[in-house]
Length: 345
Image (cartoon, rainbow, N blue to C red; front, side, top):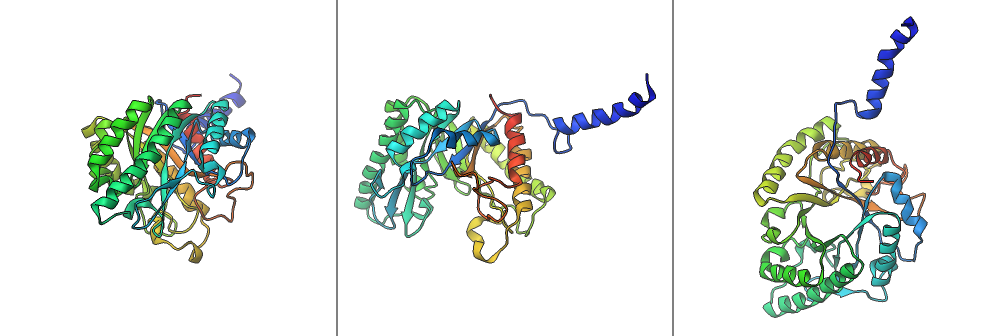
């Protein structure tokens, strides 16, 4: 053999391995994942090509979020109102669903209530039994409306609620009955999106297809946590999640996960004031890398939906953006590589 070829052969092998294993380790993933993005519902109608951009990250699933609104300490749930954004209402969801199918993407429909006065629904609580009963009637109407829509659109997966940390525990009988009602009108798979600190208190996983978790686990108080630091922080949490999945004989779906592109992004977003800290692209990239490296080769993890994606805006995110979207940021390449490895397409 020519001496030049003998010399070049090891180099070519190394280069080939670096392509197959892009993060410098012997990393094999054989099982297909739900590789999803959480779509931001726009205030205006968008077009088919705006959804096609999601393929840039090799996602095969999309989460559509028909928002509703409540008021702190009040039992009402308002949805599909004139003041809501187009992408959060029925007409928008119908068209977005057709766009997803045209792009060969599967769909999670994930109703989410925004509580004015609190923001997230985790602290939502009522003091009077009569108010709880009114809330249950309101919330049931909201969920059954979208469950019927999901069935008519042949949506692949439906989520019955998001992050009701207190209500899901205090009113567990209601939730169990609601699941039975949904099953009468929706024939796809079901989940619920529990907050990261609350999933072990949910008592109706046996009625659902996936254990859904919004995975914003605090991992580090470092300004720029390293990949190695985050991998180590995941060890006890990964073990805890695996035991829980095995106990319930269900796979875990991360109904939301993601990291902001700023300092201290793994310490809990509720603990950090974005106005007083700097953009940090390395921190976001490290966090995604450690997350996928921990979970995406596990057969008890179904996959998940990164938070979040702005459709139709080629300049979304970018080098000066601190918040969650990975668009036009270094983290995009990490996401793309793992999604490619576990894609069903």
